Amino acid sequence: MDVHVHSFNRALQAPPAVRPTVVPQMPSLPRPTHNLFAAALRWGMLQSSDVDDAMLALVSPEAFWLLRSWRQRTYGDQRGCARALQAARRELTSGRVLDPSLKRRIAFVSVRGKSLWSTFHKAVVRERQVHDVLALRVVVRGDEADCMRVLAAVRRSWPSVGGRFKDYQAKPKQNGYQAVHDTVLLPGGRPMEIQIRTEAQHMRAEYGTASHRRYKGAAYALPRTMLAGVGAAPAPFRRPLFQRWAYSS
Image (cartoon, rainbow, N blue to C red; front, top):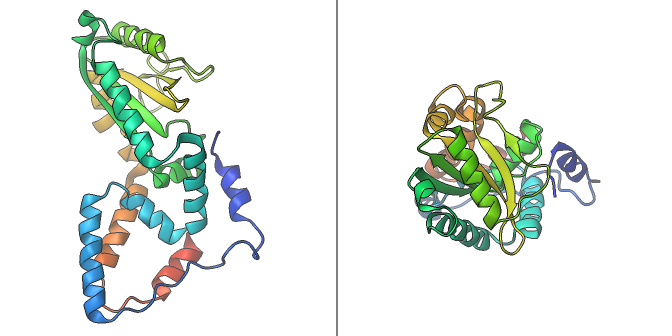
């Protein structure tokens, strides 16, 4: 199922009878309770990888629950997704997918699940379809031909989804990004995007002209900054804070 800006427009323009007009207000808390809550929030932010999602839930609960429901239907629960990604990573690095000579050319393999905030940002802000909720990245210590060999081996292990192959090595993006992308189906039917790039292409994508930080920037720093402010805010919580964000989101 594709997620794009029109899906959110339909969901968020529901009649007032079925759509809340403001974010539910946070109750005022006595100072000792607030201090304990703020400390717990700060600790949780350090431990959690879903701070962005927590901010989305505060600012736009309708979008949060729409996305959460869609991800549950399409990919299953979050723990199941994490297990599927780790299993895919183990399979790829076990030697059962890649022959020994090709396996020696793998610099590293990483996996990630796309957060709800990141999905929201891609669909609504960038107005792009979302196919990479689950993703596996392979960085090759070799050349572009080695990347294609890795892709061929992956396709022998997991079936490829038609129409999703993109060769950004032959035709780089405008910002210089290069890699080969494809979408495969994991056991159980979960779609997973695979990204394969050389070490030089990886450095450019992470730290050079093609870095995600250049277009995500402040939008991705905002959730953590906002929740850090909530955690450090003086008691008691002030209700207008959340109402202003509800109207300006």
